[in-house]
Length: 178
Image (cartoon, rainbow, N blue to C red; front, side):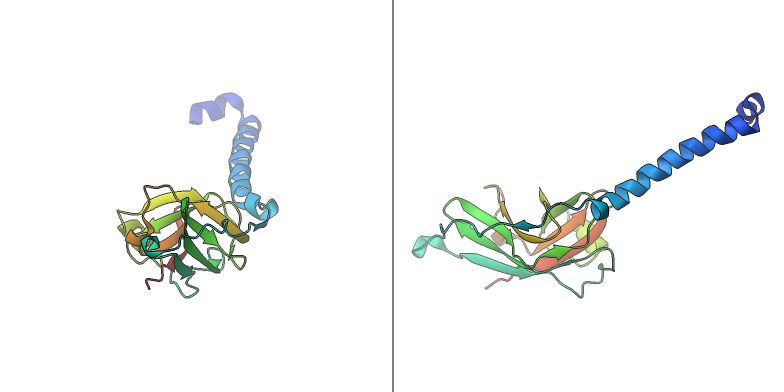
């Protein structure tokens, strides 16, 4: 690097070094700022079609949850609030985030199912049986996510929102076992 500095001269070296540093810093800042500047639209999807199962073969129809506003992993940037439910329909289970759902914006949020309680990064990472489910489509509003047949919600304890880009806990909700 010193030989390059001597060959190019201070001004040329400073220009190229500063340009490269500025490009890297600008790209990093944009990754962080992009969801704040250009958030996805607020969703207002209706509940799944009235295909709730009936009869003795139906089993449990609904598993409710509410995001924990006192979880130790939350802070003023990383948070999720609101309610939701897992609804059993004729087509299978659907994870529904209700209209009161809202999360602090950020890049690359995913919804996970955890087999144990989570409330911060260490809890989430300790759960080796967690299942990565679907990318979060919006930071606000009602959203429906059909579950693949391979996911049995009865086997899970918590729904968690996790930032894949930075490996950060956003929020979690315990599934109500009734």
